[in-house]
Every structure is written in structure tokens, then in C-alpha cells.
Amino acid sequence: MKRLNPYLTGGITPDWIDYLLAYQEAGADAVEIGLPFSDPMMDGATIQQASDQALRRGVTVASILADLTAARDRIRVPLIAMTYANLVFRDDPEAFCRRLTGAGITGLIVPDVPIDEVGRLEAATAATGIDLVLLAAPVTTPDRLAQPRSAGAAAGSSMR
Image 1 (cartoon, rainbow, N blue to C red):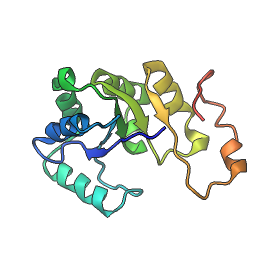
Image 2: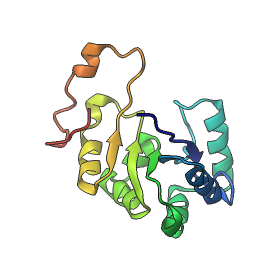
Image 3: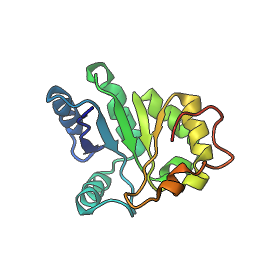
């Protein structure tokens, strides 16, 4: 099944929510919201520039979530947050996930969490009802993909 899930850096412009709504109206199946980070190691130049622009505007995770909360009655597509482990683990992953849920976010991508250390994050997303999306590099071997995650992973999780 084909799906259209565009990416939007949260807070990139003062009217960034209008872009999210335009994606929705254009037929997006979901929208991925980038939570800007000061040292984005895994993003290309375009997303790095977008994150820099948002951060120069003074955007924070809290301000992005406040914008989403204010627009919740107009948002009909699933929202997926994409961010870095530093933002998730700075305080407490479960508290972070609860804040996401409160703003209407239902999915989370954290590409820089090593699979061997994903257990705490997996437990936090399971406890808050957020779908954790795990990414694998195109060169990841089938044997590595089949390896079980850390022993700290949430029991009963269906993520693979």
C-alpha cells in the first residue's frame, strides 16, 4: 500500500501549522513533524537548514507541541514526531512521550537510538500509546535485522 507522509520541520515559520494543514488537504496520509535539534547528525543539508531556521526563531519542543495542541481541532491526519535521542532522554522518555500524546502525536521516530538501547524508549512509547517506528539502514544485514532487541524492551511490543 502506498502512503504519502510528508515531512515538516516544526516551527520553521510562524505559520508552519498552515503548511501542515495544506499537506492534509492535499491528501497526506500522515505528516512527519521534525523536532529541531542543534546537532542533527543524521539529517541532510535541507533538514539541517530547516532546523537551524526554526531554532533561530526560538522554537522549542514545548512551543511546537503548544502549536499542535492549539490546532488539534483542525488536524485530521496522524502526526509522527521525528527527533533525536538527546531530546527524548534529556529528562524522562515517558514524560516526553506523554507530552507528544497530549499534542496529538501518535508516532515517534528516533533514528539515533541504537537498537541495543531501545528498550527504555520502547517501554515509554508502549506506556503512552505512541507507535515507535524503528529504522534500519539499507545495508543492514538480514541477520542483524532478525536480532532481538535489548532485554529492557517492553514485553509484548509488536515493533520490529
